[in-house]
Image (cartoon, rainbow over all chains, first blue to last red):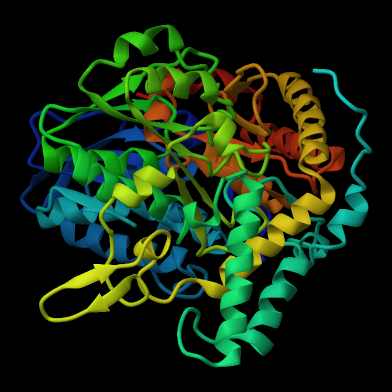
Length: 150
Length: 423
């Protein structure tokens, strides 16, 4: 059974949806990727500047639900300034968390306040919304131009 | 509209005939407001299908066994029930398909391929479901034909003043939905079909959303093709119908080849069955067809006119209640619309609305409803859509309204001015 949506739609998520951080486009950029969820129509464009294996700057544009937008906003804040390898580890840990495979309370992780999204695991149809920014980041880092999470 | 006074529906009694509607959902009563995505099957339909599977099943139109003959009889009786339901002249003009989508693809691939050529135009309405767009786009690409779109206004009413002008000598076919799955608009088909026929244009109607709400008479409409699905009609998934005019169906080449659709096969030459067999290659969805026949009987036992009156009253009530919610905008306000109610909430994405409604036991559809051009026309990414059936009542609407207030509460009052703040 799904948990109370208030556990997911916490103030931080509502607030990041309302005022997303790092919203916009880097031009020029060293890396970019477009992500989409064709079934629901969410779209995300990610631009990054990576210098010496470190994410110097990252921005996103697009439209989607609150989970998607807040996830992109919090993700860009979390990976900015981090080495690419660390961002990849976070992407994998985030993916495992929202699928219920990683409990941030018991397993060491780099997720920090991103563990706010743990509640998504109780809303299986929304997992793809939370993951879209991370899947797009993964593509951008791998040099792939587009990604679809469905 | 005046007419005979109809006995109101006993919704409480009707609900008892649906196990799902009597089962709690997240520990709360289930408010199923999603019949436009798929109807619920009454137990009578489920039991009819189970009875067939337990005691009557074998393949149809094969062999000499009594069992096969009886299965064939039940299967063909279902075809006759569909014929009567849409007032078709002959059961031979009822072709079983997997659903509306397959019916429309059949027309595009068989009739369309044989009749369209480079430079021809395909006219579609601005409110089509993807299933009445994509098959025509595929055909247009193959043939070098082009697609033109009849525009609609902000209420979701087609601009029929432009219709005559758009029916150029190049137009071969008009694809149009009877009822919009997003907007609820009921298109004036009789008038549209007459205008198309005056120019020699064949009309293909997507009736998926119409058959649950409107008594359809394909003869009175003079439709050339009329497609619909079982599962929108309180029947099962996996079965649908294509009605076509006899001379059109007879002139069309077969679509899929295989068993059942032939008279004789040799290495040199195959001769095909007449209609409808010509279009029914392979083993058909037998239990599903029989289930659809049972669903039609069930709806007839309630009465389509009583169902329509009930749904309209519920739609009026829901429209009034939703219009009282600040920041809510109804998408689709055509006069006389069917009981489909799409809306958007300022600053809140429909998928978030849908998730929170779901937790309250209110099942709706949130998304683009397989009608992305409609979303683009209204400049929105998606809508939340509630659709009302004969088993819904005011308590369902009240639960919807209460859940929308929950959404607003969770998202905070100032969400309503936030849409422009991104960036």
